[in-house]
Amino acid sequence: MSTAMGDMTIVVIWALVVLFAAVLYILWILMPFAVFGTKDLLRQLIREQKRTNELLQAQASRARPLHESAGRIDPPL
Image 1 (cartoon, helix red, strand yellow):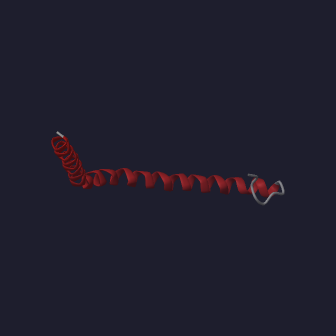
Image 2 (spheres, one colour):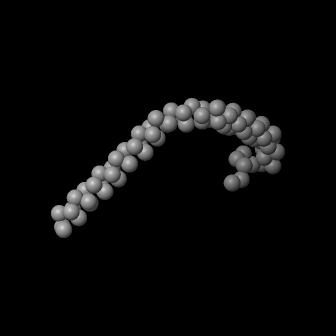
Image 3 (cartoon, rainbow, N blue to C red):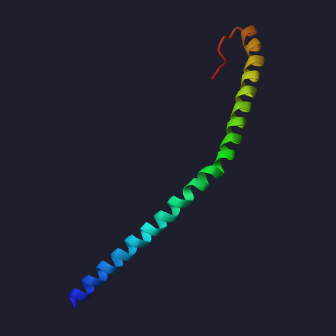
């Protein structure tokens, strides 16, 4: 009886290993499509980040004369 139980345990472990390998293989095949799908989103995020930096720089340029006229060189934190 214990030999049958040990054989069944080995079969279950091998089935889990094969199932894990199959899922991993499928994900490995699909990964490049996910990467190509995010390229446009990354480009859009980079454009938005550059625009935000430009707006912050413009805001800082407009605020600098106000701080200098008030006697402060650095803006308060």
